[in-house]
Length: 510
Image 1: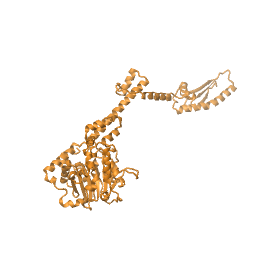
Image 2: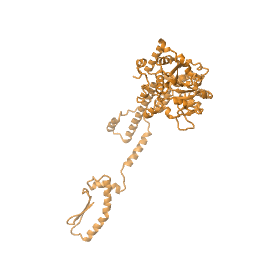
Image 3: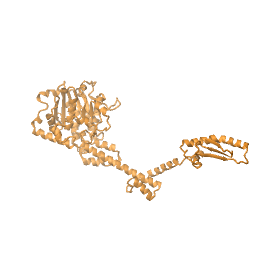
């Protein structure tokens, strides 16, 4: 701030320090001025200058020091001096009120709307919409976009469900060719294991693994990964159980691709004397009841009952409803684990494996785990130790202790209740009744033994995957499917024998 007196003492000019803004200029008449008047004038200015300085500082801080006139300064400082704000608050308030009015108006289905924002602007210029008309059209466009996005997500979920539950052409080819080999090649039909090794199938000094599956390629990966990760593969015995239609192909694979020094036994469901309608009536009912079969197998039923009204629910809920309709949930193979004590009466301790896992570490220490009188050693999947869920996929079962419990009876009871309720208690296969039946019989093991989620968690931590003893591709995105996650597939595919003629001939994972 500068105070400038003219040489003739006829004018006094007050200006900013940079000289661009003249804040005040006082002219003094030569004839009537006196020293008393001059003194009073200066005294008044002394009182005014601090206030002028403060206002100038405010202007500078707010970035308006570019103003070059008193008019500009007045426009800037006027509202502050008069304690008036700008109109932005009022405009926002009016906009909210307008949007609330439009929100209550029902959108018409047959209204022609602009295709995009550019077309909307063009129509505004030509039709001169007022604010309310603009807001209403914008609402209609947004609702149309939301509906299209939801329809797209629903279709994506449906397509993924179809891809996850269908058998890839290459896997179907592998099964057919191996089945044909079984009928034409005596070596493919050779006894598994050889007669001299049969006593080892019930040897207490060996480590017994049980695998129930109708997927030949997946079974080969489980066995290969377990053997390659083992410190003592010669002590490993694999009991592979499959269904009748897959038995010939599964037998051919392991007969032609010996996992020596490990031992493999392949048995079909039809070869177990225990698995009769008298012993497993509820499981048989799951496959035989027309309503149940329609629910899981009938494509038209799915389209009619599930897809109808799907736009009233979220894509996530719709995906859960579809997942619950996977046919595997009523397969006898999926329920066999509840009958392990009867199927293997001479075994006392086994490790049960799902077919969508990969073994990356020696599992021999599992046989040394003290289950503390419990039946099921499993990784727990909750934080509440009082009522904790646990994971299927890699479980240590004490069959000797299991035979003293009523686990199977409880399991059957709840399956019956679910059938009576038309599958309204649960729809996701074996885990819900197993959680009830094994309640109080589960011993939690270290989390590093079994890592879940590789079939549905795209952002799975790779370092954690490398550290886990067993990785589990539970979920729809199985590694042998095209919808599998590419960055997680190599942990599985490295155990596929790509040099095998059948694998090459069926173009597996090409």
